[in-house]
Length: 334
Image (cartoon, rainbow, N blue to C red; front, side, top):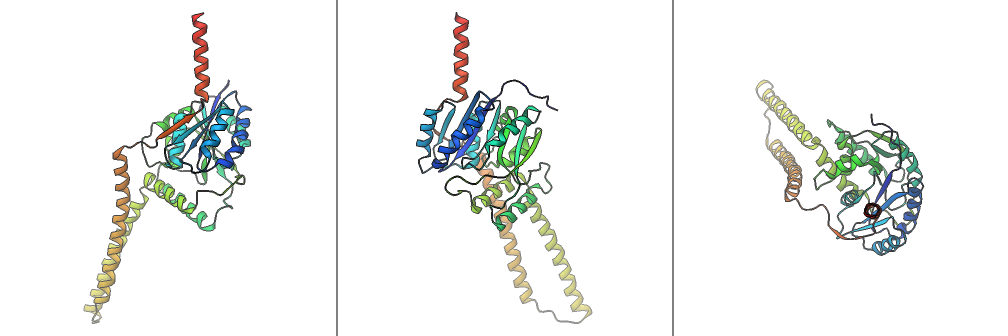
């Protein structure tokens, strides 16, 4: 058990953003006010993931008005998982809070999250009470995904847990040590372990615009998570191979019985053609699945950086730390 934590705490809030200029004008002051009520040493790191609107200009203005705000502009759109990683790499606080830029994560939950951290939790993650804002197909696919990714896996990914969470510094350092390029952050949070506490919440209505994360994005992320954290697809193919072998043996035995014992002349053309087409489809499907694994291995071997930073604006906690060090050096000289 981690002993209770007392004393002052520095907080880094990481917020990936893609085309969220209108929302950030309202979300950033709200989150800063909530953070300032918890600590006097805070920073809000907004990672622009190659936005095509005025997100960068809006954030530069907010960084000029609020010294706690940091803007990290990536060179292009690398995806939310890479943007989260860029924010965690830049975070300097004792704890890091991950939030979305659309205003759906309630800042009112931050005091409860920090309380759990002070009581010894290393990870405080949130779980949606309902998925009423998503379609029936999306909900069914999400349920099937969690069932597959957790099937036979020692690491259990919590169902319906999002990126809205608080991480202790030790957890942040553990995540930064993981080198993979195809990142499924929800799985990585579970893989690093540490003591975790769940809080349920109801997402707030989106402030402006529409979500850029639809069912297509969910399918892509789900495929990445499934291939990165589970061997279930390979096990299913192995089970299918065993089943087809048993069926073929059973059918062969039935043909022998029909011909030798029942005296039935069994025509084989339709059976042969159907069997060949079915087995060819299974083989092509298996090769395609194996190709997905090999393609990800290929990307990992190339060892390209997960993201590239085009610019950084604002100091955040790094500015405060520099000021403290400079003050200590001046006091030492005098």
